Length: 227
Image (cartoon, rainbow, N blue to C red; front, side):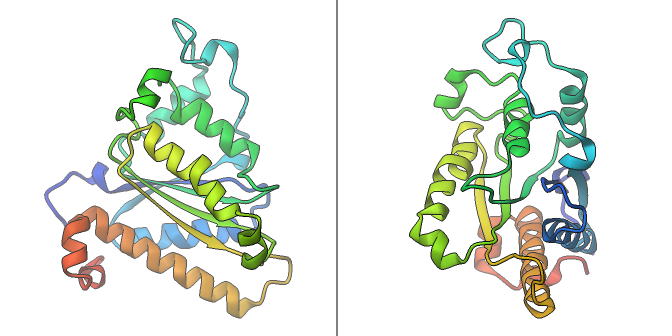
């Protein structure tokens, strides 16, 4: 097993899945990603927002501009669980062109806890997310061609992915999109997509373990992860 000099907390992945059906393809993505990360010798913090019954509603007292902000216990507990993770993985379906409201509420209440507007505009690194990696997996029942015609990919990247990275001072972002995810999805295509998820997980683990520059210089490092 490859181990570098950084502490084990630097190798944790926070996997945040937002889908109401535990048998959904989104959950299959989450489970596949977690298995690949553990096989690579790194650790995972799994957060199933629907199973947790996470409350997405930001209260007036929780707004960062409210002085002093009063955070509810669920937010404080969540911050304690995911603090110190190197990678934040968002897994969700696209509903009406955007992520589910529960995930948006998670960003507002957890990622945004205590973050002032001035810090967002200045792209200041936050304690929770500063310098960390954002990785997203999204699914849609629509075809990729239709989504591209609507400008969905570019739009979501601008208003969600890039905004989160810039607003919280994150290091980087990647997004894998899976289209035509409908009931009766072919087992062949499902297996193919999940292989892509596993490959992405191994690549992300290699980025965490060795750094981006080393991986660019020697892509074979991915194969060494977990040995």
